[in-house]
Length: 141
Image 1: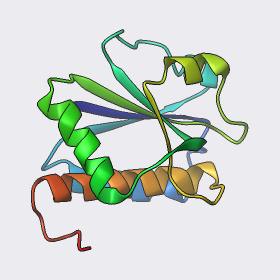
Image 2 (image 1 turned 135 degrees about the horizontal axis):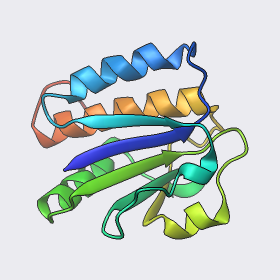
Image 3 (image 1 turned 60 degrees about the vertical axis):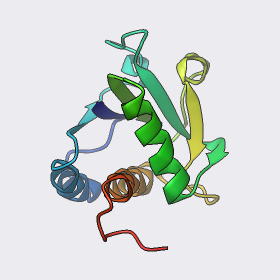
């Protein structure tokens, strides 16, 4: 399954970019995850196939623990999902069109997180999900 994380306007000198790159390398033995830092949130919905599954990270979304998150990813993967796209909005959130296109909305924390922290948490949780799926000892309950 192809994984993609889309966000907007993270500066090229952001402290989060090296961490994201580090997690991309950690995830690579399990799956490739592409990071798209778009210039405008108007581009979030570009180049999406109608069959692509879109998960929006939003403070009004459903709360998941690490195990349920990994089970949802595994269910999509095992069910033949070709592409899972995560969307992390910028400082002012996302448009209604993006909310409507999202197949699922999830919250990363009950705290409001800035965009860079949210991206870092998301990448770590994707890595953790794959370690759970593959019975790797990284995760412990």
